[in-house]
Image 1: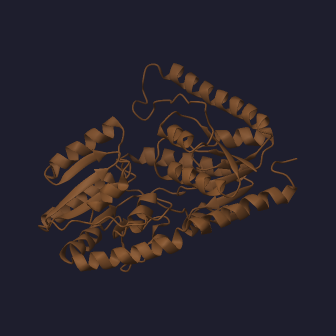
Image 2: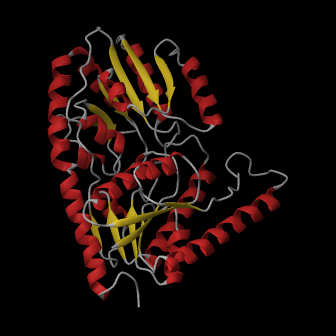
Image 3: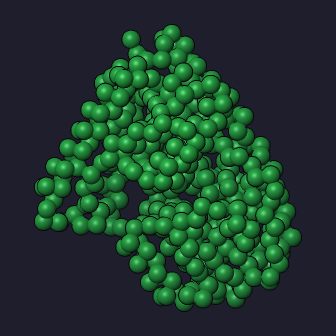
Length: 392
């Protein structure tokens, strides 16, 4: 069976990484994949290294986030809209050329491929990897949060209209998304467990890790404020923030590090590919994200046997058993995160015990075989429903 996969970005972060591992796992079950992208980037090279065909029809972006009052807005808006129209047209032709395959959309942030699939008469499986609502702890103004929530609800309406079936990455996301009339399944993402755990050299310094884009939604500023709390408690620690971000975000967080007096404690390391080496020098993952469905960074830390202190949003409480395989805290109570980190810094044996339990839980929840079995069943049921891969 031939499947067309699509994602909203070509950077290898959580959703895109999960789509890549999805293709690798299901390819072993005899499926063939073609990936459709709207931007060039590292994901293209990763797909081609694994022998997965990739087709890219790039978008032109509006540029409204950086400057909504730019003088050339009408021209930029026209170029952006025209690029999306070309994407839909070329995608439609691609789907017809591939004999109308099943289209598996891996994010609610991209609907252009789903619209092309609907026009071409293909069946659409939509993978919901984002929360419906956003937490209000943002540096942006109220008008921005309202406009963003309107966009979220608009995408939800498109999903309801175009999806033949849904896959949610957690039960929490299925409950919050609220599309009961559309057939759906909950399938946790999977992770290939590392065979050997990286050994942590004992140097007396408590090392804290942040993994993710440097944005407010991912909790980068919350991470810095929690680190300041550790400094106030006189905990000897260092912290690494692994992830990139837009230039204005990087400038903001460099300034925040200076303002909070963390220059000697916190390092901005940029995007990192070698996660094993990073976890070898880590005692704990601090993950204060404001909005998450099923974060890959938490999966990785658990698989590497590292304790996680994370915000209890989205599907994270389904991943971590509080006090046993990690710690959860409320975003509006950052002192809970500081206290959990202090406990781990004072009691290294507790950290190793929590890390061992986290790895055992990861092996149970994030199994490659279980994931492949469930997705194989979904694909076969969608094909069997009409006796063919596509709509009549």
